[in-house]
Image (cartoon, rainbow, N blue to C red; front, side):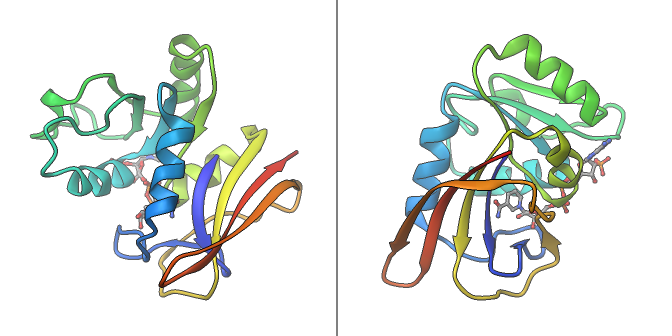
Length: 166
Ligand SMILES: NC(=O)c1ccc[n+]([C@@H]2O[C@H](COP(=O)([O-])OP(=O)(O)OC[C@H]3O[C@@H](n4cnc5c(N)ncnc54)[C@H](OP(=O)(O)O)[C@@H]3O)[C@@H](O)[C@H]2O)c1
């Protein structure tokens, strides 16, 4: 799983990430490029907004979106390559195992993290110092041990990059 969270495990507010840390976005990009990510429909819509001025949204990775809505349509998705829609978490995992020989990333949001944590072997976490207003949270992850830790900061945020394993 890959996620950025505050010290209260907050990950989002009103379907947006509460901070903007460029190095974290670069880390996400580097780790997931060429691989497969699994996301929920609400995170998909939030990312579409982020990519709204881009000619090639969701570049360089395969994206599996979970939604219970039959015939889920999104006006911009025709231009997105390597995009798949499935109707359950189990279906997302089955498909990911078929199309991905390498690493599969569970990339949020709260509902998908909640469902996915029992399957996760590694957590790539960014812990942002402080507590932000949030309505979406990462689940507890006491079963995982920290394997690597890097302290980071930019002009606005103090944060850590963590790698944890079961
Ligand atoms: N900080 C981070 O690293 C990070 C990463 C990602 C997201 N986020 C934040 O997380 C928040 C979104 O989280 P969220 O929990 O509200 O939404 P979400 O997990 O992104 O999406 C939830 C939706 O996914 C679909 N879904 C999930 N599991 C399903 C299942 N088993 N079967 C069928 N459909 C399923 C449903 O879509 P339908 O309603 O269409 O059926 C559900 O409403 C936002 O604030 C976002 O910015 C933060």
